[in-house]
Image 1: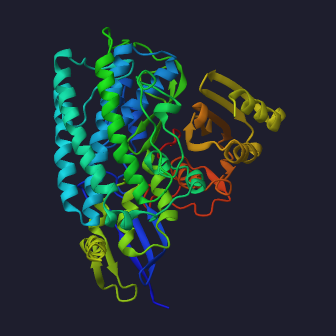
Image 2 (image 1 turned 90 degrees about the vertical axis):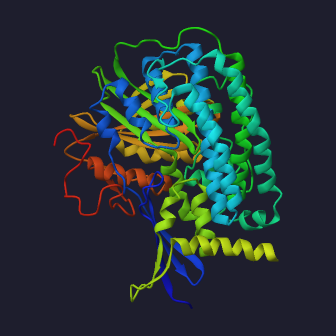
Image 3 (image 1 turned 60 degrees about the horizontal axis):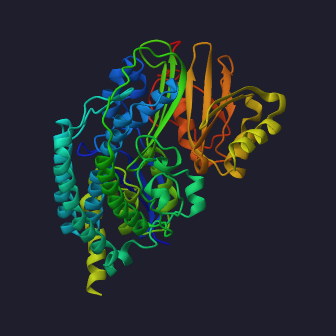
Length: 392
Length: 144
């Protein structure tokens, strides 16, 4: 039997969100166990939230994540609506959904690019990030910011959208559809990508239930859950769109779910722009009563969950936040064991956590402590495997 | 399963161990139960109803620690929240990890941030705080 080695992946890189640390136990080429550690960037935002006013909290929680920065305000304002038992003005609902869906497009494109990079398809990486730019331009037009849009507030949205921008936004979105087609073709019709990702890192339906995974990670295992359908907020129950599921459960299925969701997101935004009613955008909430509320939203990675307890004061008495990766990352324990090291990078990446960690990994001989391999080497291993399959 | 049926079944299973019932809105139900029956009700929701375990929230209300277990019944968009009130003199409760693996991380988190002890948890080490964090300091407690 080959000697058991430990590959530490992570924990920290300032490039992206969510530092985490995976300790892969490998026997020869095969991963036999994995330890996962998180908490390298603990800011205890839940505690800080107790010292901010309800209005300020929206700015605070936007900074939980730089990629899905609007998902937390979305869930948080839903929790406030639930606590107060109010429905925000119709126009604000439409604006909220538009911002949420634009974010999903840019987040999925970001993932697609990185997944391509790990598999050795650097063209996919360049394309995906190139076509993510127009989405950020739309954000800039709407909010003045390419990220951290600050559009949400309890009781509505902070600023209105202008009708004269709508034709340009629609034109820009429609110009992206052929690019989505290109990605769909590049991933679904490429035999090597298929061979490299199909049936790899599979979560069965039962695993999905056991680990309570959410978002594309669950939908790729045939679990038809989506907060936008199940517990709709914003304008999601006012427009037509399809819930995307796949049965495979592996990396391939997760990629397909995300690519098909790009179309639905563009479709939702265009319908919202076409049907957006005129009127007020804010309820101007003045007081918060004693009570509690739960709000959730389907972030690009899955359900974001916020719980608010109010004691009638200016700030939340308790603010619990649960991000989707908290559930999804734990499922790696199931997905990665039994696979080879060259597949580990893409499996760990498939739930769309933070990839940055992979750049800091190193294979260390357990006894001598000598460094044998680092993060770049692992990505190279993964890319070489793809190249080998392409030659075949 | 329909909302009314789920509530009825929980009522039957808890009997007089149900301390409070709050049907707050169409999609939100809060049920306060005694801590002894938490595993039984959680097992019913997770295994029989096939509800998804969303997360748990721990709240220091100064007089006690409240544990809220949020279960999502996705087909009907319902969140059933089980509330257990723990006396500060005895912060011990059964771990739900033997019923559902997905409770492992959140119990570790509540253990280190609020000092709740989960009986039967396989690995109650720090999740977010560093390993040498001083014993007995709980960041989310209000009495420290």
